[in-house]
Length: 68
Length: 414
Image 1 (cartoon, helix red, strand yellow):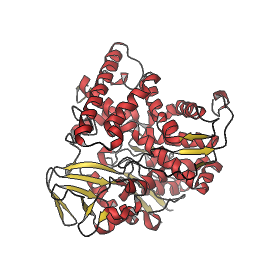
Image 2 (cartoon, rainbow over the protein chains, first blue to last red; image 1 turned 45 degrees about the horizontal axis):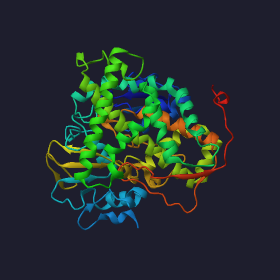
Image 3 (tube, rainbow over the protein chains, first blue to last red; image 1 turned 120 degrees about the vertical axis):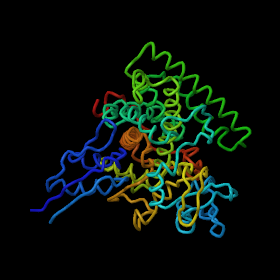
């Protein structure tokens, strides 16, 4: 079964908030506006929005590992 | 005249502070990125003033405050001390952001949406029946000011006072005065602004409320209570950073949508596209064209050596239209851009403190404007003029079908 896993570099995140705007089921915000991962392994139906959110991070703080 | 002519390819000199660049910066940005990725400020060769324009270079600089410092007290904006946290470097910077960011974070902003929607409608009510408006003076300017006054619990009557000080500091006399005239006007407005907030803070210390300013009291920075001067230095930044930037983004957005009916129609038909449109408008127009840094550690980029004390303009607008990041549509407005890593709010540790509020204001403003005024155009024959640096439209005359008065109780969501 295919899998997708999300990783956050907390040092690199500066709170642009693009991730939790684009994929609110997968990412959330702490009080500072920094990213918190809600679903580290999002299900199939959330993967497209997750990929887009990860690609949109201006700091490159998010990373994905996918297996086919 | 193409703004590309403001880049002198043979000498590597450029000048972003011209009306032709502000009006149509894309050819200027392109010439910079292509021919002189580290340009020098025109007429200042040898003075150590550089312009960095490529996306990866700007992003790298933003992420390295130990080289590209924000310790810019030498830049006169009428201040007595560094603005907090804008002009403070890490690690001190993080101590302030830890305290201030939550007050402007997404958790705090979401409940403001309904109030902001009411403010937007109040502003539109003022001219809705006229069928014409100077959208700069009557919409883009008052809106962020009113939202700020509401958040800080300050009287609405003080709006003109605060806007006047802000303009006297950012662009005294319209921004065309020589330094010997501009500096004393900036200092005078700065002194008035400090004085105003000193009185406000004194009052809030005695009669605390739930507003943004009252919340400073009792907050701890680095294990001690925030001082009065520190609170003043934050207030000063709120006025300088929070008002002009949203004004200029609204100006650029409405001016652009007025001239591009197909993009406007897409937002009217499907308002759920507005959040993505806000991001693309921010990217394509990048209203804050550049931000300043000062070199703290000697460094070299594209063969250009920059020494301690040199000044660097990070050309955010050029980064945001760089094809190496945004592909072949980088220099176009793209209604369904898939990935938009724009730097309109800067990046790195100094990422715009007010970005969550700004995004909320911009979205709600465009939603309500297009709900009530779906069709509008610039008055025929009127030539728009943009101010350099922060791209405000000096006058934005729009014509539309006059609306009948729409009482607030009929608003959706009320």
